[in-house]
Image (cartoon, rainbow, N blue to C red; front, side):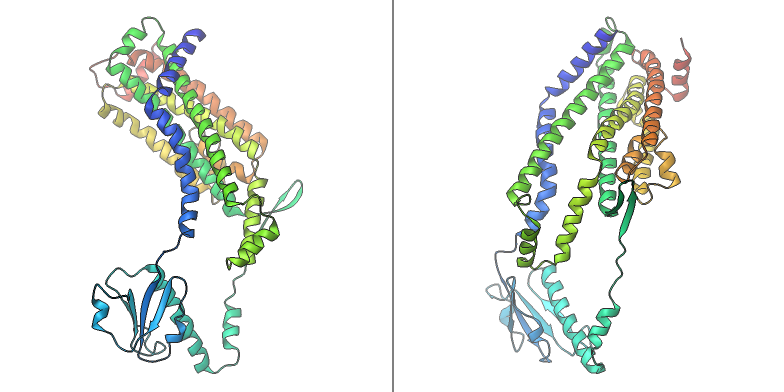
Length: 434
């Protein structure tokens, strides 16, 4: 039995690994993921190569000085609105017109342009005029140090989160840990759904093409089911390992090119000062790396693999049984709907558990086998007792065994059943058959 299961698994793995689509996606996906990390950063560093010329018509004479030119915009005071500003040959890209005192008439400013006004220009003008109007209001109230008083009153209170550990007090950034938990939840959900659906699709194709009739003549249906699930699961783990290695190399290489590892604390502060960044931003960056470094990385990796395998076995077994019971794609969608509802519930349970990973909902859902692979990955970055992790994994794999046994019974009958619409009641009858 074991030898036949291994042969089927090898065949499934070899067939899928040799496909061009698998090779392309395996190589391309890490570059796409790395691009999602670095591309926004690179785009934010690339400014417009052309400096926009903006004419300023200030009928009040109060606000022209508030609009200071910079690397992106050159503000040129102008007396009147000229007809040439509307022509295609003009050098003026936009016109800011102020028709009245903005203190009394806040809507007396407008920006004119033949093209769509860039949001950066609008934000810059609004900010500059708002500061000017605020200063004028301070002067009209004629209260000494009013601007300082208002600035002091508007300061917010920053509350730090400090978690007590066995080693002592440890400051943490809950937003970072929450983001890590959400990413792990999303990855588990996507991987289990993708590879589980792959099992169902493979079973349906073999049944539709009648290839399975030849295979069951030399291999037991149970061995065929186990081999297919193991083979596709091995492909999934192999693909994830390649993605992880390539992504680590790409992110590490990108960090080296950016010079991040070579910077000391003083270097980063010097760079931040030269870029006009606040020293507090540098401190936030250091705290970010500190929090990421304090996460139980080894524990997360081990449990990620265990929950991926356990969740994959659970849902792949169910989807394989459904694939064996149907005759066409339309029937499969109807039978698959309850499974998709459960998986979506598990995903949203994990998503909403990030707000309260120690709450009763997150606690119990991390033990329920149909949701534990997703919900527990949210809780692990926050710290979970070992006994809870062991109990959750044990319940998951025990349920895998039961579901696999039930699916094998359905698969054995359904794989050779043609021309009949199958209901859940009919599949329950197959399970009771000896």
